[in-house]
Structure formats: structure tokens, C-alpha cells
Length: 435
Ligand SMILES: O=C(O)C1=C[C@@H](OP(=O)(O)O)[C@@H](O)[C@H](O)C1
Ligand SMILES: C=C(OP(=O)(O)O)C(=O)O
Image (cartoon, rainbow, N blue to C red; front, top):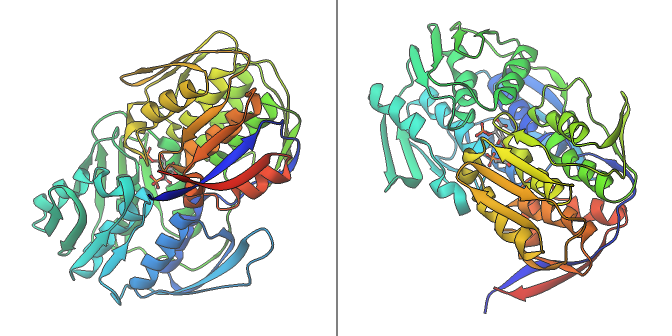
């Protein structure tokens, strides 16, 4: 019998201070921009989650040199990245592990080399959509081979500047991937967004960090992006700010349990998931937002309608907040979260209902009838970090223990999650359970 790592949580409120880990989205971007520069960049505040390791290793395969400082007791270090101003393929197999960002940000880089590059992955990544790129390869006569539409994917051919039509409602990660390489091509390009753009905040993060590395892109209201060719990335010093997607778990912990203070967040951040602050406030949460910290007090929240088209990663934790708020919460425009690390609508409806919640799965969202407390029980993370972390926070309001199977999934984005959970007073027993 296969055994999976599980945690048993004995319900208790969380209370205290937590230093929020560095933004995963910005870490990917900083590593890539540094790798495309000529010279050494210094990226401060990096945590080695599985997704970030995937991007760092992939960039090494593309010939960039990276070393890191000693890792401190919080699992944080600085990374020094030396780019050569051009890529050089040292290993033609790129293991993207389970990271959608890694594969979608790095596929266009094969187009800078013209050599055959093979991208591999695991878990749900093997089947997450890449069609937006296949369409470009077909238009540009770039050879590609996949396994019945799934990974591994091999790409061989030079990417040419030009006009790129991209849907805005599948994944913004394709737009970011193109935005990294088009500025280096020898002529100008234009990206035309053919539907309303979702996850806009992530494109904002890309444009902002590109600017920090001296690359300029003109944004015509998220409908068209004009990219001058022949630009050069310049190395820089960059500190990665705290991650609002991860802070969201502890912000909800504070609302449900006891006072929680989140540190190392930039309140002027462009991160899409900063939306958690407005959403929580609208639901009635008591938040104190200052330049140095965000303090959350235990609050009675009420259900509202939440459009998550711009902040899809908040769905798991918002469904927990909805399940424990008064009245009905509707999460709408969420169909895309079915193509993340798990089908997050099905996963949250199934697992929260096992704990005693009342969650109805809709085609493109969730309808949640809130309860004052949940029961507890045995649930599964679906091998998805955000499902594991959301269920851990739901345990705060359970009357009995919660066992989360596949609890190691958190390593994808937040390897220290369980340590931080315990530091705030969470009571955990680790165990192995049959699959
Ligand atoms: O660019 C990024 O860093 C990300 C973009 C979002 O994806 P979509 O654009 O597919 O929504 C988000 O869900 C993902 O976790 C990270
Ligand atoms: C969807 C996520 O990441 P990615 O798309 O990079 O796998 C996530 O972190 O929730």
C-alpha cells in the first residue's frame, strides 16, 4: 500500500505574528529577468519552494550562473544571478515540476535558441493547457511535438517578432512568457488581447519588473501591448516583497480565530491577491492596514458575491471564509481555477462538504451557505498546495480533528507553511496514511 504524508490538526485558534514568505510570482520573474541580463543581479528574499527551484534550475539549463547566500532560519536567502546577455543551452531537458508559471514563462525562451528543447512536468501540469503557444508555433513554422496534447513537449525553431493574438481568458501566463522574450528580438512586436483580460494584476507585475530591469512595454489598456525590439535587460538589485496569496491564508485565520499580524507585505503592491484586503473588508472583517503590518482581528463576516476573474488564486481560501460567514457567498467567474494544480472548484466543494460545510459546485463558481462551525474529518489536498493550506485554516472552526492527506503539497509554494501554522499556535501531528 502506498503511504502519503498527512497532518492531523487539533482545532485551535491561531494568534500572533507571521512573516509572510516572498512572492512566488515576483521570484519567478526576478530570476528570469536577471538571467536575461548581461552581468550579475542580486535578488534578495528568495525561498526555495518547489516552483522556484524549477525556475532556477531551468534558467541554469539555459546557461545562466546562479549561486545563493546561506539560507537563514526562516528558509530565506539571496540569489546572485549572472546572465551573459544571451542564452546557451547546457541541458536540453527542462523539468518544470508542477509549475505552470515555469513552463509558460520559459517555453518562448526555446525560441531564442532555435535548438530543440524538451519541457517535462508532473502531476496536473502534464495536462494544463499550452494551446496558446501551439497556435504561435504553427503560425511561425516552429516545430513542436507533444504526447497526445500532454507533456513532454519538445520545441525547435526561432521565434520571430510580429503580431501575436492571445486570448485573455485562459491564462495571463502566456502573455507574461511572450513579454519576457519579445523585447530582445531584433524587431518590434505587438500582442493583441482578443477577449477581456483576466488576471490583469499578474501582467502588471510583469511590466513593473521588466521596467526595473530596463525593459519598456507600452500597455494600451490591456487590449494591446507594444514591444520595441532590440532592448537589453540590465542587471539590478531587487528585493522580493511578501506574497499576498500566502498572506490571504493567515488573514482569514485571524478573522476566524484570534488576532494575527502579517509582516513583510507591501501595501502598495501590484499583486492581484492584494484584493483579499478589500474582499475581507466587504465581508465585515476588522483589518488594520499599515505600512509595516496588517493586523486582523476575529470578526463576524457575512456572505457576498465575489468576482475572482482577476484574483483566481484566492478561491480556495475565500471558499473557507464563505463557508464560515453568515448567509450566502457566491464565488463567480471562476471557471479557470479548474485548470490549476487541481480542479479547485470541485476540490474545495468536495473537501469542505466532508468537513460539514454547505458548498454547491457551479459551472463557473461556488455557492456557499455559511455555518457557524464545521465538524472536522478526513480530507485530501488533491496534491494542491492552496487546497491543503485552505483546509488547514478551515480546521480553526471545526469541532473535531481534521486530517489532511497529502499535506506535503504545500512545498510547491510555501515549504514552511506547517512551521508557521504551528508557530501561531496550530496543533499538528504528522503521520503517514494509506492512499
Ligand atoms: O503570472 C503569475 O505569476 C500567475 C498568474 C496566475 O495565473 P493565470 O494567469 O493563469 O490566472 C496565477 O493563478 C498563478 O498562480 C501565478
Ligand atoms: C496556479 C498556481 O501556480 P502555477 O500556475 O504557477 O502552477 C498557484 O500557485 O496557485
